[in-house]
Length: 173
Image 1 (cartoon, rainbow, N blue to C red):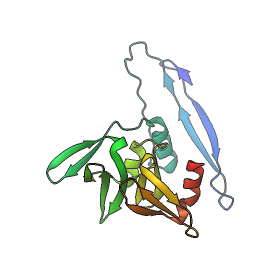
Image 2 (cartoon, one colour):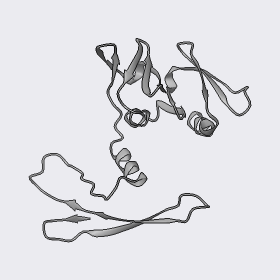
Image 3 (cartoon, rainbow, N blue to C red):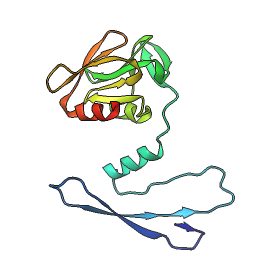
């Protein structure tokens, strides 16, 4: 809804179906667009009582620009990692580790935050604690029943958890 100062904003309703077992969730959201000729750069403000899954999805879809780099720490050194250099990112002992061609680096973000910054076409989550770079996959071994073994270009092997097998199959075709 476009408006100029003094005009009211419209309510929008949408229905979100979560699953067959849970009832439909009807969400009301006011959408307001202000036209200001003096505005240099567009900005978006979300006003909400609490951050819900819907708000997170909205923010993620609006900020769907992949990161140009990821900050990794190795001892006292900060290294800017380009996403194409990253082989995998995983959680270990309450730390997020980025394994790259240059070595292993501690990333001071949660795995969920890292996933939001990376391109979904290049990186895919394979378990609760691991994300892999699809361009760094040597091959997938489907011979294990119910799971997939992934061999990466650096020789490391990891496994797709059963929860993520369908997502991998969907992503890879």
